[in-house]
Image 1 (cartoon, rainbow, N blue to C red):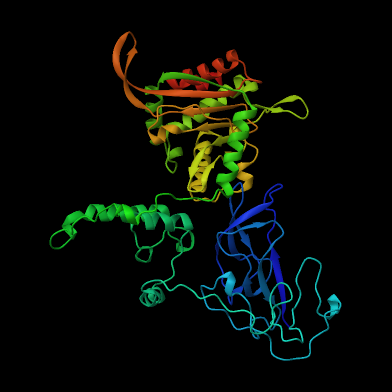
Image 2: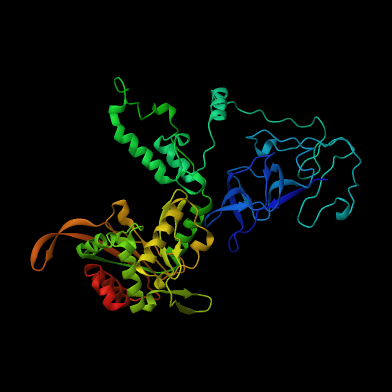
Length: 474
């Protein structure tokens, strides 16, 4: 005897009320096991993969991709039990939620609607087995159903060339790659079915896609036969282009926008700037790359900027604090959860390295690299995003000299690290070309006054001009 169970959207963070269904990994008719990943959801904080709490056969997807659902809403139904999948034929692959009404079960004696849970009713919070009514209503997953002949399935729009596309898709091997990697491949014109994955379980990584692109660029025109085709027109006729595009504000982007507005209009911001000579830091970065301790770490100047910030925090603890409005207290943190602002496809996120102050320099380098990779892949968890104490935003990677960063909510300071460029500089009394950058420090003026903010920025600059000061002051 099989039974239908519904999995309700859980609260995967602290107090979240809704989430968007990003991608289903199963379809009606698929067999699932306990803890198998069945769906990706996007909350206000991160993209999260949800495992199945049941073992059985998928009976229906109750919320389609791209839809926002409230916490507690049933999102999938699974048929469990020894007879699961026998009486209900699998729905065709690619079905949508509009198609997920199972056919009525074969005629058989059924329990009355008033039966107890032990007789086939429902458990609290879980939908039990549903049976057709005697007035010829069809069985549905939720509600009382509809009378025979009163509904018709909405016709599907057939895509151009759908027959050829289906035949081609059926002949291609399955490809194991995360959604961000698939998007990167589409953007770069790389066919994933032609690549060999180097990731876990043979999955294709960003590096695999980028390596394939480099190989195509190396082959260049020499690999082509005959004259090169004419470059296509990059712009469609004006009459064929939509003049506006509307993008729904959801998930991470919605949370980020609300947080930035709240921060900008609740904490009085002050930003100070300091231009410094980074020549010695760049030389130290190059030297670190040759050491065996850093052989498997991608060392960048950001690593030494992060270390300099933590030394400055140790010298000036008040910069690493928060304002508790309810308690009317300043909370000084004697630990550093170092946030790194990251721009992703879904918006700005600020995951943080927990207890970064306690890590060695190689350990900090590894943690920063893992954090960046996780954020770029859209896999930062709510735990990664909670509890930050101070943040760095590396605007230099975008070719920008500096900026006036907005505080991460709940923090007292954020450091902007601009691009490092060649510039004329007076060095040892002589004009020379040096590696120069501009630092920008924004701070909460309720906690940090001009003297403290200036002292922190001055100390960070001094350590980056002469990295040996990090050892002397730490």
